Image (cartoon, rainbow, N blue to C red; front, side, top):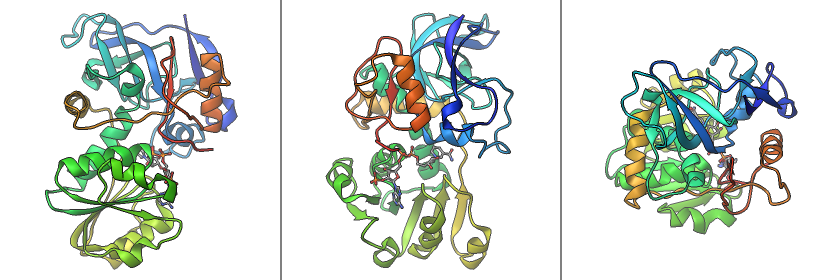
Amino acid sequence: MMKALQIDGYCDRASAKLKEVKKPVADATGVVCKVVATSVNPLDWLFRNGVLADLIPVQFPHIIGWDFSGVVDSIGESVTDFQVGDKVYCRPEVTRNGSHAEYILVPEDHLAHMPKTISFSDAASVPIASITAWQALYDLGELREGDRVLIHAGAGSLGIMAIQLAKLKGAHVTATASAEKHSFVKSLGADVVIDYRTTAFEDVLSDLDVVLDTIGGQTQALSWQTLKKGGRLVAVNEPIDVSKAAEYPEVISRFLSIKPNKEILTRMAALLDEGKIRTIVGCVPSQYSETWSALLACTESYSVMSEAEEIELLSILRPQFRV
Ligand SMILES: NC(=O)c1ccc[n+]([C@@H]2O[C@H](COP(=O)([O-])OP(=O)(O)OC[C@H]3O[C@@H](n4cnc5c(N)ncnc54)[C@H](OP(=O)(O)O)[C@@H]3O)[C@@H](O)[C@H]2O)c1
C-alpha cells in the first residue's frame, strides 16, 4: 500500500483526500518510481475542477499531480532504458494516476534520466514547464535566431523556462511581469520587461515574430495586433479565438496541449547540467511540518512559497506564490 492524494470525481479545490491505496506494479514496459519530489501546477486545479473534462477523460478515483522526480523502484521485463535505483523525472500522462503519491507507474517512453547536477526538488519543477515552453516556442512557434518574441507572464513557471529557451535560440525577448519581478525576469535573459499592470503591451509592441500567450482573455485578444505578417501566436491557457483568427488571417495561430515527452526532458537534462538553463522553485510553507498535509494544503489553496528545501519523502515545488 502507499499514500496518495486522490479525488473521487471532479470537485472543488478542497476535495482531494489523502488515502491509502494500492502501490502500482510494473507492467512489461512500465517503470514504478518512488516519488521524491512533486510539484503543484495550474493543471492540477484546472483538472480537478473539471474544466478539462472534455479534453482529458479519466476514470475515478484518480491520483492527482503531474510533475515529479524520483528513483526507479521496479521495472517491467521489457524495460531497457532504466534500472532500479536510477534517478528519473517525468511529466506523466494526465489520464493515468499522477504523482502526488509515494509511488507512480509510468511507461518507460515517458520517463527521462534526471539531470545529474540538480536536486530532486529542482528537477521536479522542470517537466511541465519545460515541455510546454519547448513545444510552444520551438515547435508551434517555430522560433528562429533573431526573432522577436513576447512571453506573457515571464515570472511564472512556464515563463521562466520560455525566456531561457528563447534566449538559447538567439531570440530577442520581451516579457511581461509585475514590477517587483523585473530584475528577476531580466536575470533570466529577458531583453525588455513590461509591467502588465501599468503598461498596455499592445501600445508599445509591434511586428513581433512570436507571442506566447500564457494568459488568454484580453491578453490573447490584444496580442494579435502585435504580430507581423507570418507571425505566430501560440496559446497555452485558452484556445485560439476563431473570430480573431479570421480577423488576422496573416497570423499563424496555434493552441498547445502538451503530452509526456521523454526526448525534451533528456535534452533539458543536458542543458541543466551544462548550466545553460536554470530552474527556480518555491517550496513547502514552513508552518506545515508534515509533508502530506502540506501537499494537501498546497493543492487546496494552490499556493506554495519560500526557498527550496529537500523533504525526506516529498517536496512541493512552485516558483510562484499564488493564492
Ligand atoms: N496547454 C498546456 O499544455 C499547458 C501546460 C502548462 C501550463 N499551461 C498554462 O500556462 C499558464 C501559465 O502557467 P504557469 O505554470 O507559468 O503559471 P504560474 O507559475 O502560476 O504563473 C502565473 C503568472 O501569471 C502572471 N500573470 C497574471 N496575470 C497576468 C497578466 N494579465 N499578464 C501577464 N502576466 C500575468 C503572474 O505574473 P506576476 O507574478 O509577475 O504578477 C504569474 O507570474 C497556466 O494558465 C497554465 O494552465 C498550459
